[in-house]
Length: 170
Image (cartoon, rainbow, N blue to C red; front, side):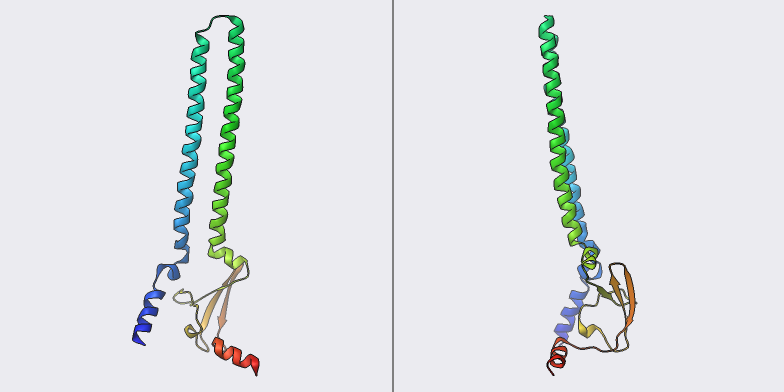
């Protein structure tokens, strides 16, 4: 019994139960890491395309015939459009990946769970999340967090799963 109480005490003190929002920290870090990667990729693409444009400009500067100059300018214009298209495509892909990660992050949020009809029950004094029938006693107050607010409730009756199912069959 002592071992069970001690194990329960240690489990209930874990950060995931005392501060569930801290679980989002890893997802935020991953989101930041991906954002940095997206920015670096976009910058690399831009630098590469600019370098190519500079190389073409230098080659153009070494040619003297007027007709060749016109052709090179047309070619530079096409490369510039291709660069813009490539950058926009890369950014679009990165945005989609970012949106997907944000969606996953939001889906894992405890507040999203509340939006789906679940509730979170806490001790109004300590703020600890109460998840088991044995955490409650008749007459005890509890705070129920819902998607759009909270309720202050008083426990009138406490029944375990076994008691609840016995009452349903009688």
